[in-house]
Length: 284
Ligand SMILES: NC(=O)c1ccc[n+]([C@@H]2O[C@H](COP(=O)([O-])OP(=O)(O)OC[C@H]3O[C@@H](n4cnc5c(N)ncnc54)[C@H](OP(=O)(O)O)[C@@H]3O)[C@@H](O)[C@H]2O)c1
Image 1 (cartoon, rainbow, N blue to C red):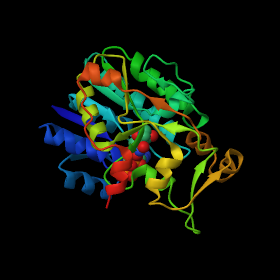
Image 2: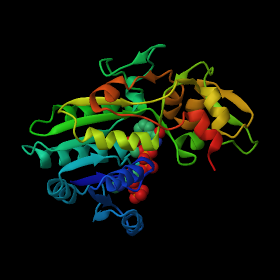
Image 3: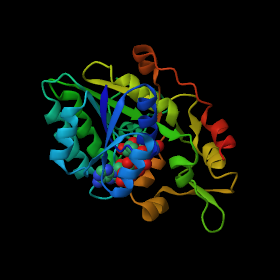
Image 4: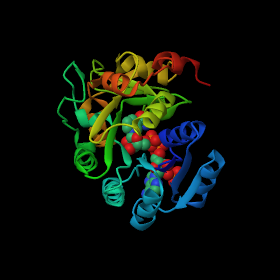
């Protein structure tokens, strides 16, 4: 199959690309710069020049493919607007084709899960940072004439530092911070396991949602300790964290645990990577 991927140069998207190619698929990928196009070509994918707001290029590449995976995200205030443009362009291009459109969301749409493992039946309750995502999920899931599928990855780790390495990067004093009291827990997923789930999800039925998580949910300071390579830890009170990092603070303060039983049962997903603490301990 030919799969059109947005975000194919990103942390998650580049690993999805590898897994799709290894499974014998052809991958075309949106590339917004010469650098991204070269990175894609180096991976073995075919660059499609364009950015998330280039509806015409996106629609043409979506129609030419057998399925689409949207894993791009612009980390700017423009991000939600660009995401909507791309989502609407892909959904419109695939109407009446029956092709899969796999959309990348995240577990922050669940908000606090109240000490319980959320599953796909649990109603969303997004933190403000990702409030827009719930509407974009709905566009994908309600689209008719195609198979709209949403994947909500837990905190992703693997292949180096990833996002965890960034958020628990020690400051100039060598101290790493977690937000709030440190009693909150998160779920995790390895990036190669996650990429495999995307590949399997291309065969999922219309209007499917899947959490991607594996291994135990862990208290955040335990992970902060491992991700910061044993740096001394300090709690950052939520109000102070909001002043320093804006709405990201509330996402990092979440007590958010999810189960991926549905993906395991319906898609025969078999997450096999070492759990997050082991992976962090053995990274280069
Ligand atoms: N990482 C996690 O722990 C995690 C967990 C849950 C959900 N997610 C979600 O997963 C998605 C991907 O995350 P990631 O960690 O892989 O992000 P990432 O490493 O920052 O990758 C972002 C990708 O989007 C592309 N991109 C950004 N702006 C673009 C634009 N205007 N036009 C075209 N392409 C653009 C980037 O291309 P360039 O190479 O050109 O920059 C890159 O390929 C996001 O929606 C994120 O919220 C991530």
